[in-house]
Length: 254
Image (cartoon, rainbow, N blue to C red; front, side):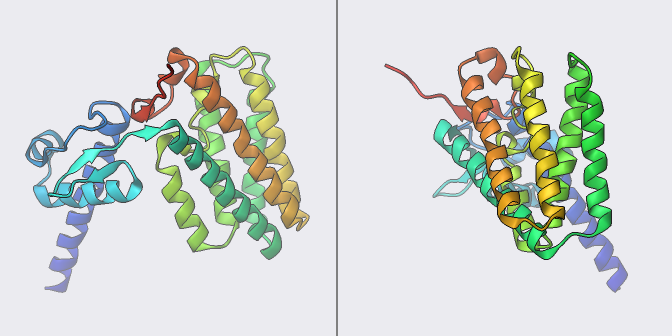
């Protein structure tokens, strides 16, 4: 009997995850617009799962910050001001700085350090080219995301890692959120070279057990994302390349 219950629970969980991932795609991709009320029945047909997984997925997306709960029940797609985006990036930088400091103070195993250095080497190979293609930027995003995940793991703190994962669920707050937007800039490669130097510096600081330096490097690292945000907000074409850009509420200038 217990095995049957376990199987049912696993099936329900997988359906919730399926609904959550698909709903996130619809929101980030702009098919569900900011301020739009979520119609559960329509999602049941669209996603192909029952109402219970849909409801659980909606609650999870509210916790991620992509939805707002309505006082009378139900959810609407949330929008974000430019200040919200700035603060989300700042929070990620603060948490990653903390993770780097803890990693340096507590020490990191050789396996994680080796994996991080291999990521850096693969990014070096990409940046060795004088110009980067769209395919190169895609590979950079993968390697960069992996490196940031490793830095989070190096902290040895489930609490810090969990909070970092939460802030990174906002697409524009992720470590690679503005990489494709900066690809349109003639200085795009230069920006990645600077970021790569910081990647190398933080790993060196962690290995050398220099916690203050490691934290400072990661805080400074987030400033690149701030710069890319400012530039993207000045260019409609660049902004459209950012995942979740449709959720950003542009400031109106008189």
